[in-house]
Every structure is written in C-alpha cells, then in structure tokens.
Image (cartoon, rainbow, N blue to C red):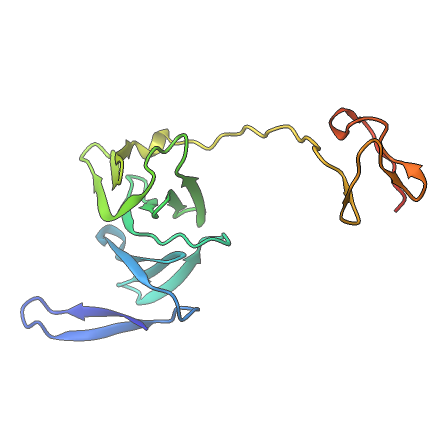
Length: 191
C-alpha cells in the first residue's frame, strides 16, 4: 500500500495524511507534483493520476482510459494548470478543466524512444522539457494541437465464418465477390 505522509520540517515528526486507496494491488507511485497555488498534490501511478487537495483534504483518481499501462514517471504543470507527464514511451497531457487525457506516443513526432524517470524541467518562459534515451524533447504546451485528420476507411479483406472470401471463393454455391474487395463498391450479404 502507499501512504501520503506529512513531515514537520522543524521537528521532523511525521504523520500519515492518507492511505492511498488504489483499486489494484499492483499500483505503484512513480512521481509526485506539488501545485501549491491550488493546494494540490498530484501523484502519478502506473495508469493515471491521484489528486489530493491539502486544504480540503479530499482526493480523486483519474485513470488513463487505455488497455495499456502508462506509468507517469515525470510530471510538470503548464501555465494553464494542465498536467504534462512522460511515460516510458509517451507524453501524456491531462486537461484539468476537461478531466481528459491525451496520449502522444513515441514515434514520428516524438523522436525519444524511451523517457527517463524524474527527467523534466519547465523554463521561465513556459517551455517544457522531458529527457530520455535519445536526448530531450522540448515544446511549448500551447502549440500542441490534436490533428483533425481522419483517414479514409478502406476494406482490405472480407472474412466470413473465419474464411477469407476472394473473387474465386464460393459460399453456399454463391460467389460474393466478382473482383478484389479493394475495388468492390457494394456487397450484399444475407443477414
């Protein structure tokens, strides 16, 4: 289990503020971030954020909606109050207003193949830096936009009852395709 502990800097006396009630026993804390302007402590774990408000003594979980774990290993707050985090293979934004995550995986736009734990920095001008195996990634958060591009839908294969249907394939003595599926405009199937 994980606890959030308060330590008095003068007496070094500690007290447990909260036992973090993780839903899964395999949840681990990877990073901490203090937002004193809003009395918040953000805790990054292996698939989301835990928010503890020190003034109200309330907490809330925000799980990343993915079937893959994204341990939040480094975290920063941008000038608008959004949380930016690195996982081992992605940059993740949490919109504090919308309560939504956006995942930017490593690849063409992000050339870091693996990010390092606790390797992040925010400049005075608001530029964010995340360090990794291949150097570092830097950006101004307000310049990051999601693409509206939606690729066209293309059918490349037709499978019925686990059998691939080709133009030469008959099903119940009936030919479904007269040409390749890529060049077929319409298919009529019995329900």
